[in-house]
Image 1 (tube, one colour):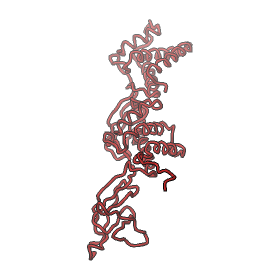
Image 2 (tube, helix red, strand yellow; image 1 turned 90 degrees about the vertical axis):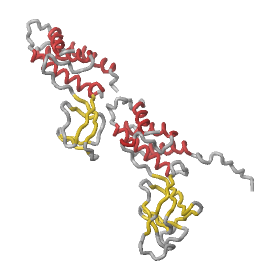
Image 3 (cartoon, chains in turn orange, yellow; image 1 turned 120 degrees about the vertical axis):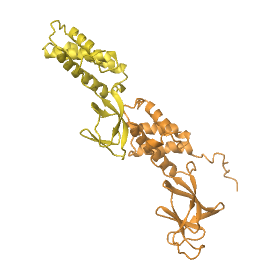
Image 4 (cartoon, rainbow over the protein chains, first blue to last red; image 1 turned 90 degrees about the horizontal axis):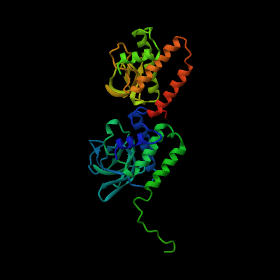
Length: 202
Length: 157
């Protein structure tokens, strides 16, 4: 699913009807698409799902080059530009790090996030995180989006609404409706085969 | 349609057998009417008067520039162009009114014969009005034609 596909479909919507691009410029359509995607990412960020989760291996730098002991040296790395929330932090494939309290120091089994950096006592960590949406520009319209195709009609519907002014992101009911639509699309996505445990089993 | 043909039709509609309207007078009326038609087309966002050109930062808008098709990150001051996103140049779609007709050998400004014909009839109505004829009937007929042409061109939305 590319932004270009969505933009063409939006221009075809009955409320828009602008295939000749004489009423709305590509900048207008892209701005509305960015608004929609931003709201969809926010909605997904509040839900329990792994749809957009991203995994990166971060190489951390030593905070203080003169730190005496490799074992106790504090390492840090800048978080990715689209970082929204931590899902998990692993030191290596089988050791998960836990968030350390802000009032206490770092431990071997913990990490801390301060500002836009992550700190740990390890030169490399695997960060699994939930991304925020970075606005698209006209240079990106032919690149595949991270949202899967199942979002196509939802994104078209709200983009057309924001474009024509029929909907506004300042309108709480519109945002609530969008969140509801997103939830309907993704709820139970990864868990649909979970058997319900009978209440009488002990 | 050539402008010479349009002037011939213009005189024919006015029954101008004595050559009361010289070429200059015809062109003046045709230009009035052509601009009216172009503005009406732009008002209904018709692609017939839309065009696309590359504008440059610090430059001027092209002659006949009416407005952009939708919004662009550009700011106009008079005819000066300033891009708000730091671009040096940008391909911009905009509505343009036709350049004034100056010569009988030119082509009429619109790609559709019916629009050129409408322009001539409108020009004739302006001329009749100046001659202090009662043009209310003509105006009613032209308004009807304009409404029809508008739906034929897919406008009005």
